[in-house]
Length: 323
Length: 249
Image (cartoon, rainbow over all chains, first blue to last red; front, side, top):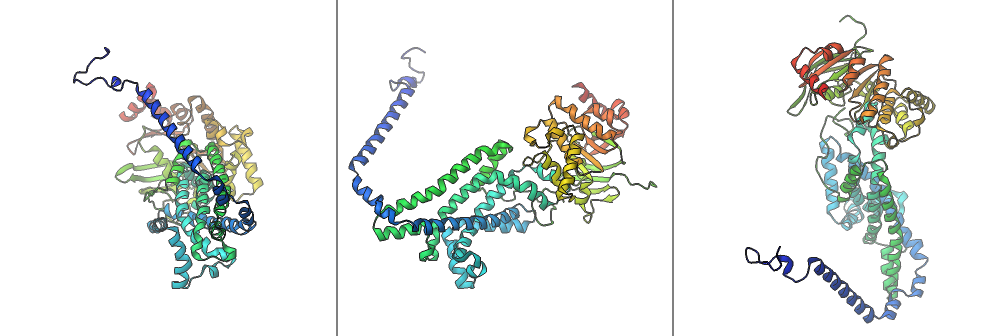
């Protein structure tokens, strides 16, 4: 192309309009962003009152005074609640997942309705349902039904109900990621549908599900901060409530920082472990299948009728379209 | 029939449709005990569906399947018990990837046949020896070649002491150089008197090992007879065309 040549329609070739190459322009733009960022940081650093910030957020005396209660009461309650709720959610979620995969239509509908309902309303509202609606309007008290859970009963059940809705979709994704041939091989050896699920399908599904399950657990740890709505006694404070109370007492931001650090101390190792497991779970599951499962689990996608209906009536358990 | 022993497998006007698609039209087939029957035919002819109807991995939409004279299409039959008499080998092996070879070979013995740990382990060792993989007891499926995996899959089926074996294109997913080792194991089984129903594209195997060859097309049995007749001197035009295409490769 001749230098300075004018195009047919009278417009110059684009390369020459700005007098510099596209690459050069992109470089300049990047530098402009760097400089602007540095300016913002400099303004914040210079204008901040560091001594004040430290006294508000990192007061060593206030920090020390939070212990040991912040661990022995608050963090303990948060962790125990999360574990109870997760265990309950896992059991209920597995049942819902199996119902979702059932060949019996009413089971599929019931599970879908449950999942949609409890994923669609705020967790806080579910806690209100368990903590107030059931005992006041229906005289149903979790504490009497599950006395061994003590004070954890009501909040744990509330959170488990919510967690189950999410976990069900994760578990369903995991089960569907197990190749169909696995069920066929198990059944061809004479295993019943539930034997095949127990010994062949679910163990494989859970391995694929470990990373998404870890993420669900992290979410649940954070959701425990909602249980204050059920009323809090001195011994039943969770980490978030404890920090709020301490902020109000001390008029300092330090309890907030302390609580945040403890939440992170719980959640960050979990996500790190989950990332490691995710890397390793490619061991025997093909990358494609695994990605499909993780994607399904993470998106918590809703596709009605995930499995072909068959005459697989027995216990309404998922299986092939065979008896 | 006056024979006191019923055929191992008997299909009576077997039909199977997937919605509008009629995959099996009306199949009548008998496999007597100790017989080796190979089913050949173009893809889509219904061979695999037929095989999968024999142990009810597919539910027939018409006709009957009799195993040792028991109609397993009758909903009152105990299909799980019947399936323990029928070993099945899949094209994709379908080994259990979360279990090692020993686990693959013992899980059905333990869960279904309720054999003791020792008994099922002994059985695992002996069937593994039979397929020539004694040193792989503690390997995981992913550590084995395709041919080895398929031999383990055969051993897994044998571990339940089946009376008959179904093979669904057992060598189709294998690299060509690994086909031989699997066919050798199958020939060994045939020589030992196992009742076998084999869907295959291996004409050499069918010709050498089968007692009878069945040619299927369009959901029907077009031609059947001794291998030398069906493969060597086919009578039907459709069979001739199929075999020409197969041998041209």
